[in-house]
Amino acid sequence: MAVAYFSPNAILDFYSMKGRNPESDYEILVALILNEFMEDAFGYEHMIGFHISDKYQSNISNIGTVDMQNLEKIIREYVEQASVVDIVISEKNKKSKIRKGFVFQLKRFGRRDGEEDTDSLIKYLNSIYKKYGNKKILVDLVIVFDGKTAIDFRKVSDSIISDNMPFQKIRYLSYFNGNMRIGEMWPKIGHYDYEFSFKPVNGKYLLRRKQR
Image (cartoon, rainbow, N blue to C red; front, side, top):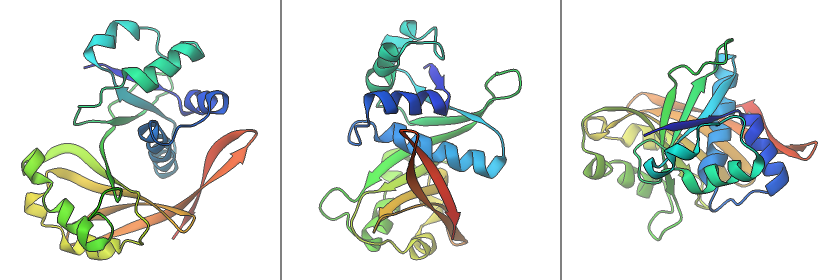
């Protein structure tokens, strides 16, 4: 399966012209947040990659130089929805070559009945092995919490059964009371998080971070 890489600015230009669709574009929006977090943490630029469905691979030979119409097709139609990897964030070196990066599986949580609080998130995480098995895979799980209740992520971290967790690390994004939080959890060890906010700059939505 091929991976199509884009610069964050190309995606931001796309949204400034086409607008955002939070329902269908949530993976792309999460990718922008993760990219900002990675660039801030490591101090160098990254590229954002998406797995492309096999049937569309012949259509993406000019990734990075495509016009806006084709870019829209790629990020809204060609992205593979059934892959264990949803997003790749990779370093772009000085020669503009892509290096091996971080891979992420996204899970939305908080939209369905019974997915409304800390205890339900713990139950969900401790049962995820039923879908993926409990053999460790080199993918980070990203929980995107869409609920209307504050989550006690410290309690979640302390309650995860690590032997059953197939993902090597758990990250989370949470939007509550106007604040966006991003963080990481290590079972039985703890967690840390940051607050993010979207700020319009010259018609584009960029990210600003403040550490908690």
